[in-house]
Length: 541
Image (tube, rainbow, N blue to C red; front, side, top):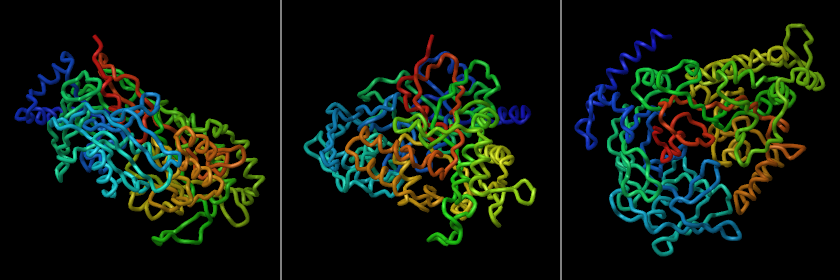
């Protein structure tokens, strides 16, 4: 491992030097690699970061940029603070009609785009209308229309009440109507804290502070983002080339001179989605559907009870994580009553025995009539952490009498297998709508959401009431009841259509004098979410 790292550092040093020297023709003066490395520790207004891969579709919020992390170049109407409470950004206030269908937002009058043109309600209207037509990851199907009332008032009319519409106001960066063309994703203009200076695709992104930004001014005038994977980012940190680097847990025990390890809690979770229905049918795409073993609730609940989640955190994640029990642990809409007592092997065995599962032939695998307690668990073969989790779970469950066959597959293969086999997925969002997508019968078999075809009318009713609520606060009680209401729910205490395993800490190596502020709970996606509060970052003397 050390030899490989040393080789990579040498190669990386050459590449980085070439990149930085190549910047000398840009509007931000370039320096040699040696100069940049030396000045990183002395200058207080520049940073070099390796915290994520480049966005495939560029920096256009109307096609999804900023969904998982601050959009940097653009402002949003609302935002979440470090406690995940909703606060104003461009908005000065907002009102929701009594039927929940009309949202009226008043915006600031003192905001300019980085090209000097004023931001008005017309830009907000244009942004949302364009995003709704883009067919991207932004789901604005509930929006019937958006209108302007004067220059600084915007009215959204929804087809039906939807409490989670507020998330669209939090994540959608506003683009300028006058400057939003085909090349906008590569050359964004916005009203956010930073401006794009240079984007060398596949290599780096250089940004500078926006002097026209209306909010708290960032401490750093220039930042360079290097597009490296986690292993390469670690090598760059060891070589002293970066101020912040995201790293995998496998490197967390190695000390790097001049840097400290920051472990940020997340809801970036990993869990097993079970086929919920019996086998025998196919999906509309012709893929096999259902599994007779995992369709038995005793199997799903026993696995949830028997898995030692703390052991997974310590053994697979090197201690950098937490046990996971739902897709939203620790978030405002999470129901802590959904937690179960895990690693209860005796309780799991009794549950299976009571359900008629017994080892009749003495091979260590339980049977129920002619059905063996065995199934396949697939994971994306490109993900070493999921591989380790899958193998560990199979080993932990083996004494229970359940045989899990672990197989790594490509995503193309998983697409055909995901409805008839258990799959080790990763999710985690600051939007409660994700729960709806994962557990609603309306999303059964849709893309990668409810792959197991889970259905519970009571759960559906709770979630529909949560969506129809007038406010996020009112919706929370319904989201919590959908997880567990004392009798049923989609958590492990209820139907257990999933066995959630761990929430992965997001790990970063940070220069000792660099303060990255208070990090909120990160969503799915290690990297860019660390920049959510980048305006708070500063050097400590």
